[in-house]
Length: 152
Image (cartoon, rainbow, N blue to C red):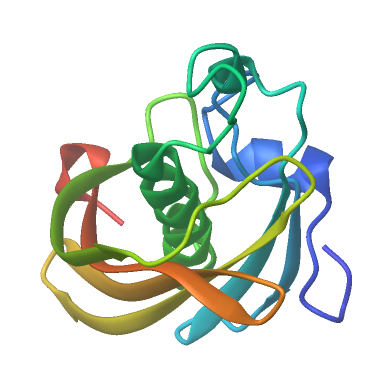
């Protein structure tokens, strides 16, 4: 990790078990353990989901925007907990509230993902998340993650 809080793709792969085509973060732009994280997803026409969602009018599925925000939250949870990931340590997405979709995300967009820790109760981490394109919020949610086996 660079001193400025950024993480490149190879560093992200240490924290997330996801791989193509389900890895939905390209770069961590900044993060503060215990605070917040900002990540980037470059949305390209080559994404496999655009083949069927929707032909002739490609729109990124909202559930994948939610998943991208959850992946950012998972990286922040690991960085905050200060634990090294292993093949048996994963933060699972366990709940969502207040999910809202405000605008479509299309090929060529740069999706900026933000997650802020609201609180941690025992092993459940609660995050306020949002996704934006060109400074406009396109989706937001409150989500919860928990570590595999309840330890982190």
